[in-house]
Image 1: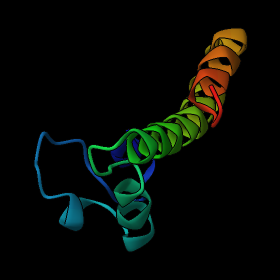
Image 2: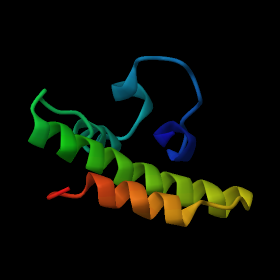
Image 3: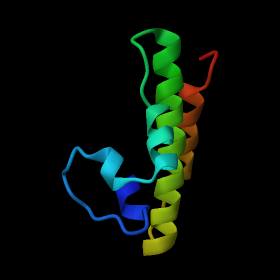
Image 4: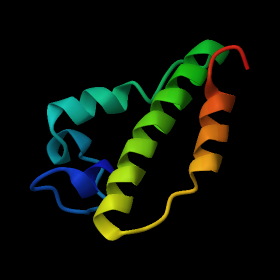
Length: 83
């Protein structure tokens, strides 16, 4: 999804993330991965979800679609620390 909103980017199934996205998106993408420990996985999942929500909101604005905000909040809460 980051490729959809990156200026000059094209949608391809390529694995060349470093060639397709700007450095800030690559750095942000790295925060959505982590070691196989409960804390690292929860952090990576929460980072991924936060970014996904931003991209979904941008898509909704661009294409006039509706987002299930209640569901988004439930998922965000489930991924928050202490759950």
